Amino acid sequence: MHQSWGKLLFIHWPIETSLLRPLIPAALEIDTFDGQAWIAEVPFTMWDIRAFPPHIPAVPGLRAMHELNVRTYVRFDGVPGVWFFSLDCNNAAAVLGARTLYYLPYYNAEIELEQQESLINYSSIRSDSPAAQFQASWEIGNLLPPSEPSSLEYFLTERYCLYSEHGDNLYRSRIHHSRWPLRKASLRSWSSQMTAPLSLPRPNADPVLHYAEELSVEIWSLQKVKG
Figure 1 (cartoon, helix red, strand yellow):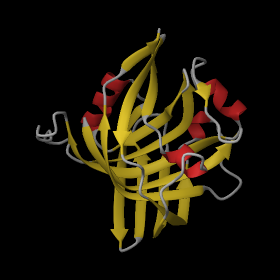
Figure 2 (cartoon, rainbow, N blue to C red):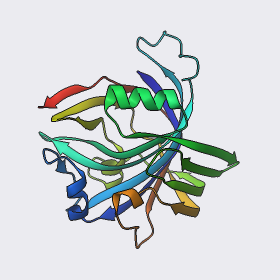
Figure 3 (spheres, one colour):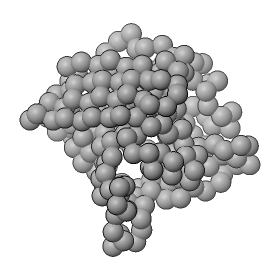
Figure 4 (tube, rainbow, N blue to C red):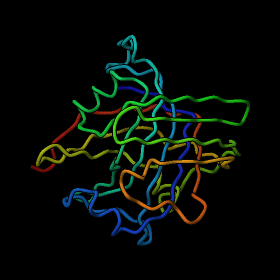
């Protein structure tokens, strides 16, 4: 399918690999940068959601929605990708579809996004169990140079597949997009309970932030890679 993602903030902080290991299938290697694992909360909005080929019109009720995901980074057979701990969305049909077709831990939530010039306010309250809430306000900063493959920015943002698990099977979905047009960002406020259901600690230091205004994305169906 095709999607456009935007108004997106990467909120990353380092975390001990040993804390993530019990939460991720044993077949997946936890990906690290200079030996350090990372976890992220990513609020954004999406629109222009439609199936391939591109001329197929969007499905009514599924054209646009907001999403908030909690994620880390993994590898399987050397292929780097994303592992999602949770994905909150304000569209019940999309939640059901992603749970069914991609085996992803989607949850229904009430999400609001407001923008005043360069300031974005984003809030999410999960309506499913376990309960979780998120609120952040951030200021959009200057455009950054394209990230280099050896950089932390590239490691954290340039991910071209996702992994999911169903029963004893492990799956991979390929994702294609141009390199993220990253910008600086600064937090005005940030209050989150998104990692509480995972029993993971909150960061002690300031998180690493990157913002992106818009990106066009293509997502392929799942392929079984183990099981």
